[in-house]
Image (cartoon, rainbow, N blue to C red; front, side, top):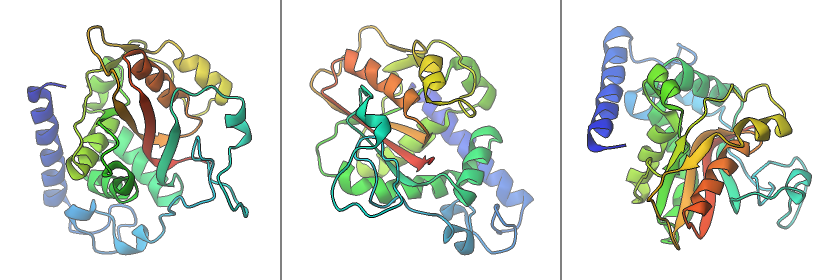
Length: 251
């Protein structure tokens, strides 16, 4: 995205937050009962306490949480037979309850005032690993142009820019493009998701990531099919390492 595009996104966010501040009192936009403030994304403390962080044990490849006792790194059954182009997925929280509701409204209802809430969850979890100096840039999962025009923003890019500004990493949204508008992945199984996105993305000609370490950013991950398809294109551009960070992980 060019400078004009980034400026539009910033104005869009300011307009959304200003409109909410004018139209509503300072209360939580999830429960509509407790006090909330804009800098915390209009989510009150009681609702924030319902958020469930992703903690070990989880699969060291896809980040899938495991309910049980495992003392060391492990790989889930899905990943043992998978040939992913990313080396790992990490998520900040589980895609349940308050988080699921906020993500849906952020993504489909233009509720951009939730970005600070979601962005802070991502920053808190990802900053320790990304600030170590071993990663070069962030790449948001792209939307098809028609879908982005419909929504007026790309939720993955908004989150990537929030994260990048706080961990000191540049964001490149011009490296991979979505060339096919695929049906929603929401109700598809793993194999159907893989087929759905197999040819959906393309690396932009003339770009190079030779020897660089790249982080793919998205809002939520279920099977990893979409992020893997993006990671595959980044590898074609020469990326040496690719990992994935998302706000929320579905079980």
